[in-house]
Image 1 (cartoon, rainbow, N blue to C red):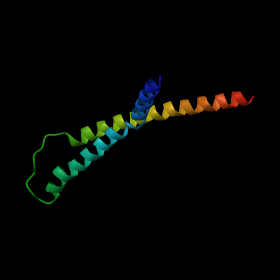
Image 2 (image 1 turned 180 degrees about the vertical axis):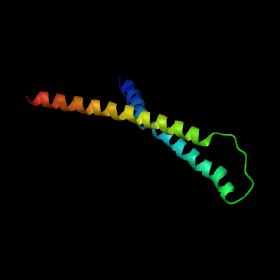
Image 3 (image 1 turned 60 degrees about the vertical axis):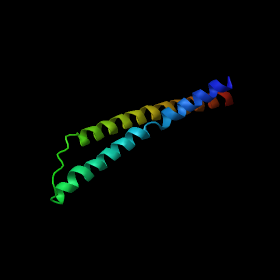
Image 4 (image 1 turned 30 degrees about the vertical axis):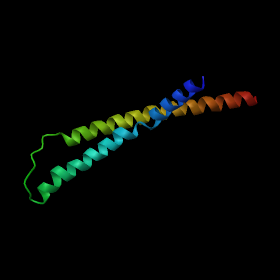
Length: 92
C-alpha cells in the first residue's frame, strides 16, 4: 500500500509541475529564433536560411503549457475546495 501511495504521489507531483517543460521549451525556441534568425539579419550577416518554424513551434509549446497549467489549477482548486467543504462539514 505504501508503494502505491508513493507512486500516486509521484504521478500527481509530475502532472502538477509538468507544465513547466513545454513552457521552457517554448521560451528556449523563441530565444533560438532570435539568436539564429533575427540577429544575423539585423547585423547584416549571411542569412542562415533555416526552414524550422520557430515561432509556430514556440506558440504551440506555450499553448500546451498554458492548457496544462489550466488543468492543474482546476484540479488543485477542486481538491482545495473539497477539503474546505469537508472541514466545514466536520465542524457543523
